[in-house]
Image 1 (tube, rainbow, N blue to C red):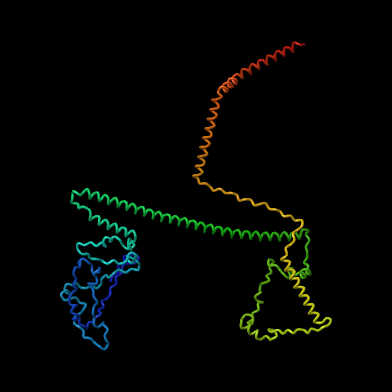
Image 2: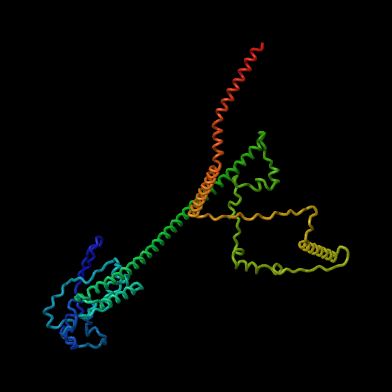
Length: 473
């Protein structure tokens, strides 16, 4: 038996097994058993091209019948036959080739092949001549590729049945008179098939689009989760750093305050001696309550003073301790004093005690009544009326970009129309008062000449007055 793997890291191996005959050598192989065993297997209507390991494997094998392997009593010895039941008939023994010492039975590997081990077994088949079963039209379908059949496969099968029925109604090819009819029918069928194919393509595109959408959503969700985790980690680190920084700042602040307090005590430069009397008289001094920052730890070695007793640490010890106590400890005996009349006697003390209890009960009752009394309103206190609360600030929904663009376009159009209307009004007023405008223009044109004449006349008057002044002396 040979193991053929063909792997680079696992070389081919070959194992040779010695033949082990179950029949001892002293027993004859000429056993004449059942008469039916002498006849060869008769197979009718069998395809000779089928392999022995195919669907007809059971016809080529049978269980050997060996007498000494049957269940018989140990004290019974059956007579052996002279013929080996496993040997073929005598007429076939000459044509049979000798059995080789080694042969390949199968391949064994430590690696699992999912393609060969997950698909169900499909037996081989033999069909009669001239018949085509409808089941053979589904030979293209396989496990996980159309099988088990779903809604799409059922629709495909129905379309195939309709197409086969349509092919039966199709005119023959050799009929020239119905050739145009055949072409028209085939074109119509082709159009239907194209419509069906387009629908299938649209469905496939929708499915792919949905899958792509889910993948994008999943990626976006993963990105958001990753960003959230990253931000949380950063925030945690920042918080830890902030807390440590604040703690350090508080420690430094306390330390600085202590230093300032110590320096303030020595402003005058006088050294103060220790007052032993005041230290021991004050229970808050360093003698009774030393501070840890000075280097004194009061709880150091406190475990040495722990009381470890069996009577206090175990339940059985407590029971034993309770049983050892006398009766007057667990069951106290109280004896009332005799009420003796007279001055300073027990009766007077008893009455005094009762009076104190009554007074205490009366005070408690008064306190309870005071809790439910309504306090009197103050005389000079006026109630300040609070103004009514302001209504909430209204909020306006943010319009979309398309609405904003539309509103800006309308406003621009309104401005354009209003400006054009004002221009038309100005033009109409200008046309109505064109005569007045012309008169004003002519007046404005004559103004420079009039001003020039006025200046000339002023100069002439000034010259005349100057000459008169000079001639006067």
